[in-house]
Length: 325
Figure 1 (cartoon, rainbow, N blue to C red):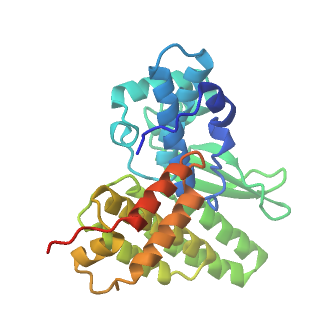
Figure 2 (cartoon, rainbow, N blue to C red):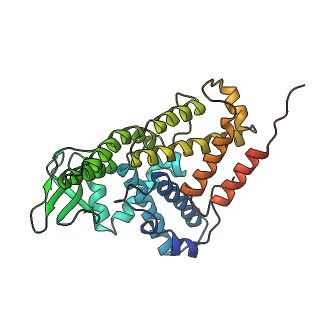
Figure 3 (tube, one colour):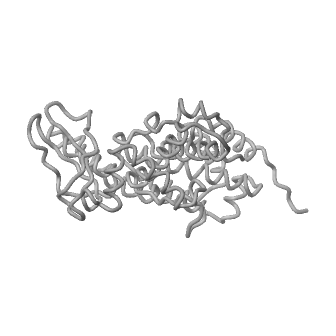
């Protein structure tokens, strides 16, 4: 399948600005959908920039997409290698990021925080760069989010006109801080139902965080079918609404990876299951895996890439392997 979607430079200038599809302060927006769109749009725009004469605006868009790939990698705490993810040499990719931060002061401050910390009290957990405000906070209570000098995410609560009080607990990714802030608001409201919901979601996000970290890994210590079975078990053990939704997307992603592997190896999904000797997964699970792969394409793939991914899945479904006589 092709590496780019073939959209024009004008189309990307109108539709691919990161602010159009990234929602940093809303973890309910699926991680996979945002990062898939971001990496795909960067590859497309980079290909256009490499293809010949292009406008300065397209260069600025490419550089902005590069910066947001770095920012997202810290925001969601996933492993990111420019060469492995988007096919661009690391030093060259870094020049794009720096070119963007030289033009946007707010992004330059955040990039500096995660690198040299020239503007921070380096390593100081009490020195915090404010990232944004929770617009869904309860009436009369303000919730702020930030990153401290130890590169951990934090949240603060406070009433209107008062100095915000930063919670002392550090969090490795934004979603962990957001869930902790939701639990704190439930505690303030004396809402035991929501408090239990968000504290449960905090525990379940620990499972999802490990999967997010390895989102771009195509190989690991376990066969793909075993990873799928492991994620499926964790999904079934989730009790919070947030945790269920987060793990469901992970299961669907692995179902898609299984289907893509079957396509690349000219096999059916049932053949992959049989080959893995996974006694815990019945061969009838192959149809469910295909359904989940389609759900992933429909909800978490870039809309401009979906037609090609649907064709891929169609070919997996219709392929009948030859058997030795």
